[in-house]
Length: 317
Image (spheres, rainbow, N blue to C red):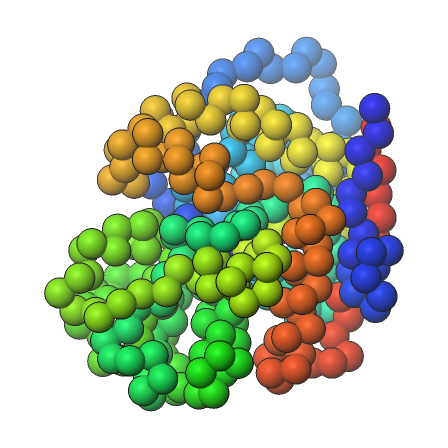
């Protein structure tokens, strides 16, 4: 069976992170599989270890389920905030990263290497913009340190739907959202999944996945697997990443049982999030959503019109 990694360039002319600091379960694999016998063929033509970085949030768990085992002897897996992963891949600290879609769109030379992604098709639950005042009156917004895509989406929604361009400031991962001096606060991941914690300080909140879907009728791609390293066997790597995703889907119940306590969720709520709010396929509808995001960001001046966002086609056998 052949799986083709979608090439946005072939679908649309000229076109090709839930969340928080790493938890205990980020360092554990919820499945133990026998190590492959014999040496594994390297993923890189230079025979070097391939350094893979993934989002440290709950929504990446099905995408990296068992991946550390797959990489044993030929690579290593680390986790961090989405924004830090984007900086690491640009600096060459990692070779492959599950990075914010916004960074992929704006950074020349990055290539998608997998059909796996973090996608919403309506409410996303783990990405929220909280308001202390009426949204149209916002003068300053604090943006979650871990965010790049959601920060751009917040700016885009406020500009395009409200006609405002608020000042921005960073909300560090250790900052208390209730104490920050801003009219609106963007939270992503773990902190955003408990809006009841902030009812005393904010009037209302936007679920940004829901807002995007109401605005466009399209899915929203928050993050995808990318590389800029030319020596990597992208076909084989893409197959490995997609197999990890399918394994995560099969074992999603076990993932939730292992990790739900770390995120302050029940097993049922964790399952609800990973099966009804977050989707993991970069399918044609998701690609159309990604292209629409790019187009609107360009129109709003968030991405340069001449950004190099082409993507190579691959086939996994």
